[in-house]
Amino acid sequence: MLVVGVIIANAATVAVCCLILWATGPGRTASRSRRRQLERRRDHLRAHPDQVGYRDVELLLTESLPAARAQEACRGARARRVPPLVLWTWVELYDADLLALAVEAGLTSEELLHHVATGTPPDRRSLEIFAAFHGSAAS
Image (tube, rainbow, N blue to C red; front, side, top):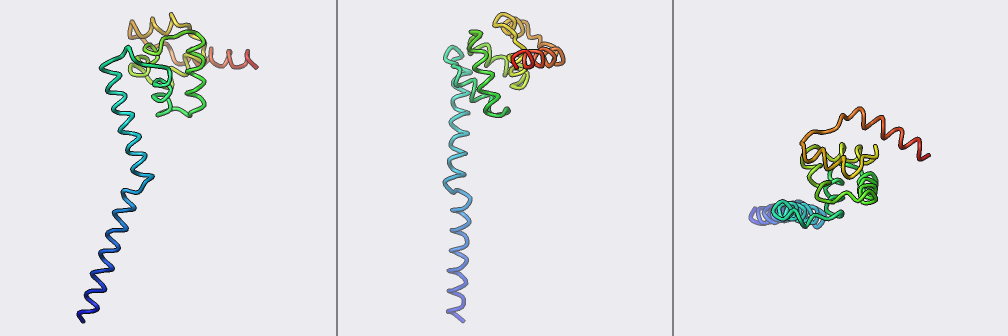
């Protein structure tokens, strides 16, 4: 009887250890660590907005957009010389999808800055129409 009890206790210990390893495995720890790094960077940028870069904006966009669309939005904004701080603020005020749509619609740096400065988002439907026009004009 004692041997059976020892075997059961050892099996339970092994099961608990396996469960702990599974819960804190390398993949899970890496994603948690990555999320923590992004949160720390975001907190740092809120305290020091003058340090926002295009890569920061792209990382922010990829949290809610497909990576290709986030890259294209940043590429288009950089081509129009939109400061990264304007892009960052836009996402904080409105959302990532509206920023990507505004860039796809061809809004200029001044127009994007105006919407950030006044706190007035552009009409989404109008942006969709202009984005569709720009997409077909580029084809």
